[in-house]
Image (tube, rainbow, N blue to C red):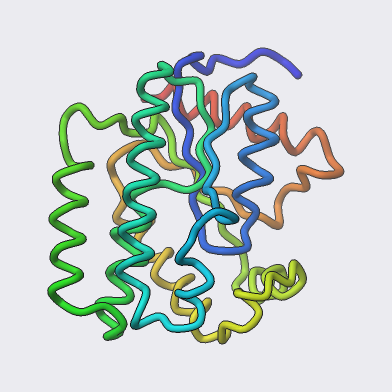
Length: 214
C-alpha cells in the first residue's frame, strides 16, 4: 500500500448503525495504518441480553455501562498518545441511543437527565480527546437489514425491524448535525474489504485527503 499523509497520532472513529461493518472496517484500517484498535466489548456486557429482553427496565443501566466503558477507553487512547482506529464513538450513545429511549418512553425523564448530566461532565470538556476524523458508514436500509438478519445474532434477530428502521433514521439525522470533528461518509455498497484490496487503498487515500484539508 502506498504511503499517505496520516499523522501517526491520529484518532479515527468508525460510526454507523448496527450491521454496517464497523468492526471489519476498524480491523482492516488499523492494520493498513499500523494503528492500535479500540473495540466495543459486546461479549462481556452484563446488561446487553437483559436490555434486548426488556428495553424499559434496562435501557438506563445499559447506557450508563456504555458511558463508563467508553470513557475509560477514551482515557486509554489519550494516555497511549493516539494512533487508534475506534469502533463506534461515545457521542452516538448520548445523541442517538439514550435520546431514542427517552423519547420512546423506555427511559424515564429522571434517568435520562441523570445520564445527560454525567455525559456532559465526563465528555464535554476541553481535555477530553476528540477524534481527528469520524468515518460514517451507511448504505441502503434494505441492505443493512439483510446484513443484520444474515449475521444471525440472537439478540438482534429477535428485535423488530421497526427498531432498526428508527435507529437508522436517527443516525441519518445525527450525522447531518455532527460537527465535533471532520466527517467522511462511505457507502458500504461501494467497497469490499474482504475481497478487494484496492477498496482499502482508496479509503486510506480519502482519509489522507480529508485530514490534510483540516
